[in-house]
Length: 70
Ligand SMILES: [Zn+2]
Image 1 (cartoon, rainbow, N blue to C red):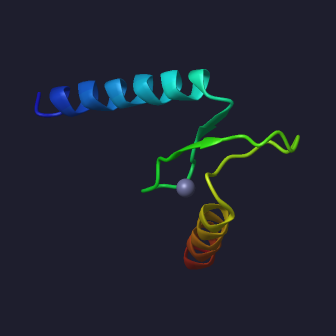
Image 2: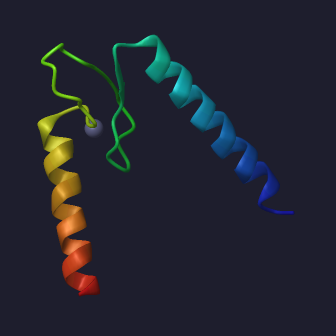
């Protein structure tokens, strides 16, 4: 039961993110702890992060995780 409110909050956040992503020509940054909404600049390259910095941060974190797991 203690997870009910947290689940509702997560669902609301998810809905908001989906709505924000649908309204803007871009999306929500995929980097954990960022969550910024970015605008796609029409470069033709699908963006997943608000900035190159976030993309690099996620790549480094994933690399670290893989190293720690392996
Ligand atoms: Zn970001």
